[in-house]
Length: 306
Ligand code: ATP
Image 1 (cartoon, rainbow, N blue to C red):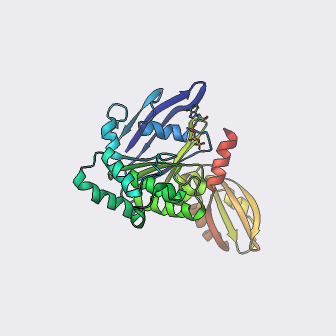
Image 2: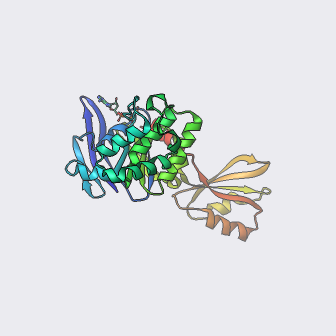
Image 3: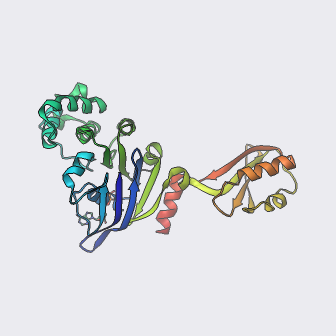
């Protein structure tokens, strides 16, 4: 659905993007995650055709964004960081204006607007002037305009920025609903947003992609956690014989039970072979699981090593 190849962009002496490449497949919901100034908005503006890269290429649904812009716009719904809403217009009037701009035929507009306001829970508010709406409601209006033309792909730039916790949950639920029919890429600097919504995260720092993986892959480690009912003798020696094990670290006991981190040499899952060994040795196993990092620690490690 999106193919971005070797995107580079500078603003004067500031290099905002350096050789950024990634792809998005149909049906995915992917978070573009990065701190302020990382290059998220620049990436999104290039993907949506609002900004030309210095070099590189973007294809949306197989179409070139720069030369086939019109066809791309028909497939794409875009919520910019600050949506250009018109405070004096009612929601209804604004959506009609957007439907005209999108060249939705007049006889289809009523149905498309009803669909978009139903999806964004705005049906009961159509006559309210946009200037009187809370920020959460305005984001919903922004999303309604983004889906008016039933796009296959939605690109949302920081859709929950500046919202209170209730509004954030509201917009997240909405994004989840929209994901049933569209592929979605959204940018955020909030880790929990990615954890709540995405299958995959693309982490961007200083204009470069530092990680692009499914959340489970980002979080996985080579290590396993073993909790026993009682201490056993010869644990370290027996585990050391397993291939892929490079050591054993005692951990703080868990609920009073002895716990260990078994260090792996590669990212393969050690648990099946540890399980077989534990059975053969009749170790009193309470718990055996693969160790996992939080997205927060993955992100912090990337930031500090950047
Ligand atoms: P934020 O989360 O703060 O919106 P971002 O990840 O979206 O940040 P960008 O807005 O893409 O980051 O900015 C990337 C870099 O390019 C930053 O260093 C920013 O200061 C710079 N930049 C962005 N737009 C311009 C501009 N119009 N002129 C000059 N520099 C710019």
